[in-house]
Length: 73
Image 1 (cartoon, rainbow, N blue to C red):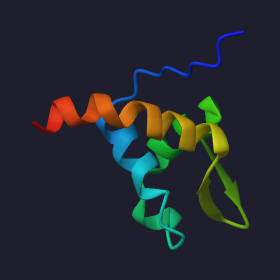
Image 2 (image 1 turned 120 degrees about the vertical axis):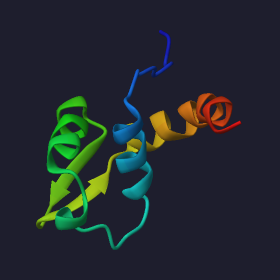
Image 3 (image 1 turned 180 degrees about the vertical axis):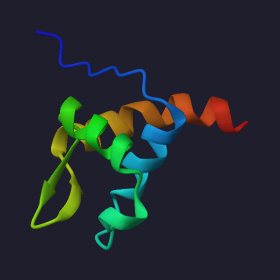
Image 4 (image 1 turned 90 degrees about the vertical axis):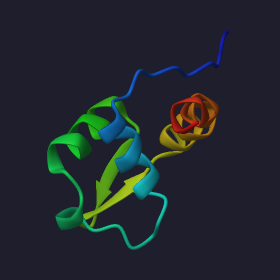
């Protein structure tokens, strides 16, 4: 079985996913539409009215980070 997780996220989705790494992320500071997309993909969740990154979201962020370096260069 291939454990590779590959998503074509938009720049807004990447930024929101990166922002969820901080424990103080607030729903009001995030784009709710983008957050809802990430929740639907299983990359984020909302617990006690606070958005959190899921283990799957962390894997996607780590695996996708090398592709993001090309965009930043």
